Image (cartoon, rainbow, N blue to C red):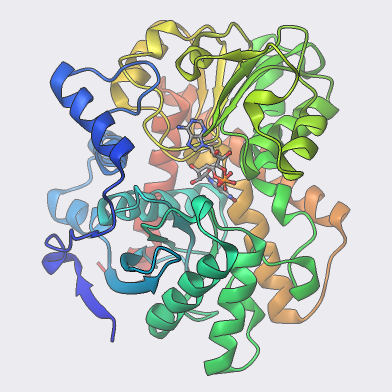
Length: 454
Ligand code: NAD
């Protein structure tokens, strides 16, 4: 039976028994020894500290009282579950799964599920909080949640990933529901994983497509959902570009993390005429100043190719990706990858944050001094949850919109969010990130007050 915790008793749940990856430990040991993360490493600051920093800065500006800060910072409900799975090495591996519901004032909880060895409860808390502000900034009627399992899904057989997905759903289904909490894909989880989770939930509750979004089209998924996060990023960039003197057709860009978000952002930027000059994934990085064909690279990786072997001669050390000269740098991998150890090396005009929490506060300050324009995660990558909202609406009505309708509606919401946040930033003389947090926090506080919750 799942263990349910409230905000006040949650801080002890830190076991993640299978998080013994040598690479993670080595990177942490080096960061600790030197104090500053190296260019290719992630920052030592946690995603939770990153989100907390931005939440506190916005709360200071809003004059939010200390007691209300506790209410709006702490998660409402946290569930930690054990997922024992016998893997092909013959051993039972015990993974930890988390579902954290941060704030539900504005609607049902909503957030993705990540399968990654570095998942821990603090990371899930950070991502759940970010979802609360993101859904508010986008103006979709959801609260914020997140889930994760600390398993190396990209190294496991699909049969084992399926067993983990079903086991996780079995153990958290009591707190989920189409009007309570709706899951979605994130790192190393995709439409197939959502299909398994929906199927597992359906065994207990009957066919319930609205329990997860990001499903395959064959199972009441929405047209346009898979591309939505990357497409939403590009909509935001198109709004910003004229004010920055940039024309999408003449833009060069670099993508860090060529997964769902990164590859869709790249392919849609390329449709506008922009040129990708550098790209990475977990296997390494490549650079070609004449341009890398985003569609061909996607097809090559989908067919099983290794990014670093795409077009001979382009491989560079992963740490060098960050310093490639370009107009737009798109982080679309893990959090904390732009930090004080590498921010000064960046040679871009814009950072378009496809990933969640890619930029630490220290890096943010360095980049502000360099006049780099940051379109932050809390607005830039909201396209995924916006089309998840469309998918949920379609599921509840058992109706389907065509892709054009989905994309048009997505564009309307992303443009509106950009304009609302950028005009707030202008009015108050602050950057987009701080303005987005102000807008998000204000909307959540207003909803909680109107409900009579605080
Ligand atoms: P994904 O698993 O499809 O892709 C992740 C990519 O990052 C993979 O190509 C992987 O190889 C690469 N990667 C991993 N470690 C890396 C490293 N050290 N250096 C470079 N690349 C590395 O995941 P995704 O769904 O595209 O999510 C990417 C980011 O976008 C995450 O931060 C996620 O939280 C965020 N995000 C995703 C969605 C969504 O709808 N999928 C929505 C909002 C935000």
